[in-house]
Image (cartoon, rainbow, N blue to C red; front, side, top):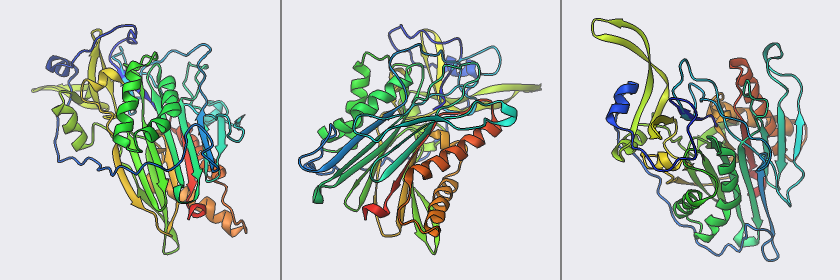
Length: 435
C-alpha cells in the first residue's frame, strides 16, 4: 500500500533505538487533537486443532495445496522510496513542499500452483501517461487472484509488493481453506509481506489456529528477522473457511467483503473494519498507549487569531527515529517495530460469519482496490461478471477473470486520478462450489 509518510529526508534505517513522539513534536507539526469513542475488539474463538492440514504441502491422503503468491524478488537493485501519497497509507516524511506520491506492494506464485501469468495489457491512462499494466494471475480450486503492479512516477524500477496466500485442504470433515492478502509498505515492505506470506499460515496452524497468538508470533519473528522491519511493515487480512463458518483475522487496511444474493440482487457484507487513526476507537487506543495522532496542517492564511490551516492528508500515528518524525496512516500492522512502540498494534480483529446458501463469493483485496472502489461497488462488479457468465450458459465461474475485472477497473480509476497508481491485488473465492 502507499507506504510511510515522513517529515524529512529518507530515514536512516541503520539506526537503533526508538523515540517517543513528544508533545513538542505534535505542536511543531500542528497535529489535530484526539477524539475518543468506545472501541470494539473482535472476539476470537480458538478453532480446534487437528484439521490434518499441512501448510507445507499435501496432507495425508488429502487434496491440499498451499499457494503463496509474490511478485517481489529478494535480489536485484531495489528502488528508493520517496514520500508517501498525500491521502494514503504508510509513513511520510517532511519535505520542503508537498509530499511526493509513493506506494508499496507485490504478488506471484510458488511450487504446486498453476503457472503465474506475467503480462502487459494494452494502453495506459490519459494521453499515454501511464505504461501498460504488468499483471499476474493465479488460481486454486476455489479462488483466483489478479494483481497489478503500481506506477511510481520517476521510479521505473518499481515492482509490485502485494503478497497473497491460497491454501485449500480437502479431507472430508477436516476440510480447511485459507486465503490472505498482505500489503507491504516502507523501504522493506516487499520483504515483510513476503515473510508473512511464507510464514503466517504455518504459524497459524502451530498456534492451534488462533489468530491472536499467530499474529503475535508473526510480529515476534519480524522483530527478530534479518529484514529491517522497524520502519517497514504490511497489512494482513486472512479468511479461513471451515465447514460452514468463515473466520477472519484482520490487521491494517486491507479488506474482506462477502457477496450475498438477496431478492435477485447481490449485496455486500463487509467482514472487516479498516484500522486507521481516523477510526475513533483506534485513535483512542493509540493515544492511550502513548502515541500521537493527527494530520499535518497546511497554512492557507492568517487572521487575528493566527494561522488558518487545513488538514493535509489523513490522520497518522506519528513517531520519531534518529530525530526525524514519521507518520503511519494505519493504526495496526505487522512489522513497523518503532511505530508499535508508539501505539500501533499487531493484534488482529477477529470476526466470524456463518455461511448460508445465499452467500456466493468473498473478495479479499489490498487498498489499491478500496481507495478507488467502494465496498458495494466491488461486490456489484464481481456479481455482474458472474451474472453475465451464468446468462451465457456457463455452469462454472472463472474467479481469475472476476479478480481481473475488479483490479483492472480499479487501475483505470487510478489512472484517471493521478500519475501514481497503487499496487492492486484481489482474491475472489467462489463459495458456491464449497457448499
